[in-house]
Image (tube, rainbow, N blue to C red; front, side, top):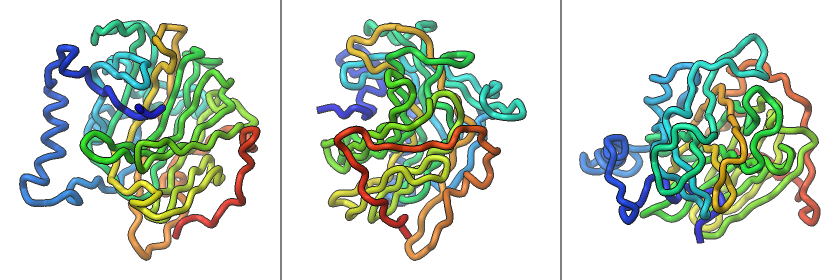
Length: 316
């Protein structure tokens, strides 16, 4: 079964008449060249970065801008580069700060296949291994503020599938819950392992710092430097282990997907700090470099029927 957040359908299948685009070809070459040159899988693992989303050229060096059909659990949309708007004013951040807006609406739909919604989508060219992944983001909201379309679904994730086992770690935010529900999920096989939490705030109303701390022995989900959820285990057994692509996703989640109003996702920074065996890491490095975030203090509850376990210590 296709997972709730997996990227199955990034491009239109051959059965739907697609051709390999120049971007897809470039992406394939980036993945295969290190192996052809004898560098092995590890040589393709991405290095540390802190990305300011005001500069499109800098962003394109790290992220592929999605183009084509996106099909996930029956929800279809068109990934359109026109729906990635760089150096835009980010309402909700102090001082007129600027960054990237991902849009979801019914304009400029070019991929066909009956899609009624166009979206912005980012996926890193490189894959990244254990470390700290950070996004400073305002998840789905209406242009200008307020609630987004009820079928808007936003994810900040790391992911790999295809010829490799399904490995994924995700923050996901269904807009139909008033912005107060967050899904924390991971895969090391074809089964989704998910914790759902309620927060005492509308996460789409302001910017927050979302971090994933991924180690061979577990994962932490951290928002605004508060530990929200943790799992512990063994890499390759019950913890993801494959290097993964970094994703920023805004899409519809209804089936069949219909245009039910516009939505935006604002993104100020994305960063990655690698973990090294034996090293003691501080809090995610990007939180020290990002601006002050004007947001309410979050209090987090487990969804009814899912009492939270006492939090374990963070991974070393």
